Image (tube, rainbow, N blue to C red; front, top):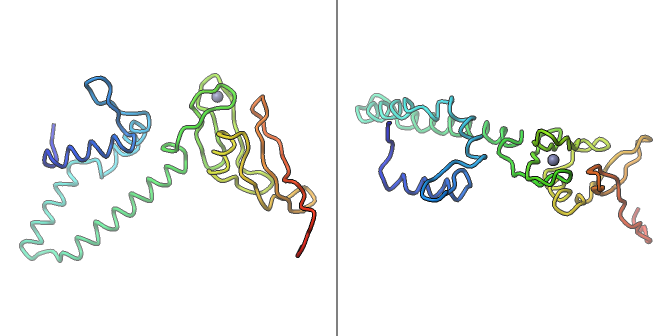
Length: 193
Ligand SMILES: [Zn+2]
């Protein structure tokens, strides 16, 4: 096995992985978490996970030393690559792979993932699904989390009914895991509206 980095940077790396919940301690060993495994699956075939990349960087550093490569060029390439891979990774997060796991209202397991269009329970024998487009509006991550954690979304504003009229409402969880609208109390003084 190829070992990269000094023992000191390795220890710091392990601490960071623990803190960010990619790995966990189990008795005397360290094992990957589910989140860690997903990220590994995503990253393993990418250049960033390839030892050859470090080799390429070493070669570039040599070229810089010998005056064959402008340091700025090297730095810019690293910046561009970092930005690209970070963006790709965040896009993956939006697709739910690394998003927090929420408790399913039906099977009560911590198996709900957020995807762009739906929130969905990942248990094989559970079919809980929530469409995030409600009356023309995308229900935010925060609102879906509130729905699952408190039984009710934050106030969804600017929803449109069939007649095209705009309204505000909450979505509340029902016992069977479906949702229904709950309306905020009507304000009695409609000043300015
Ligand atoms: Zn479920």
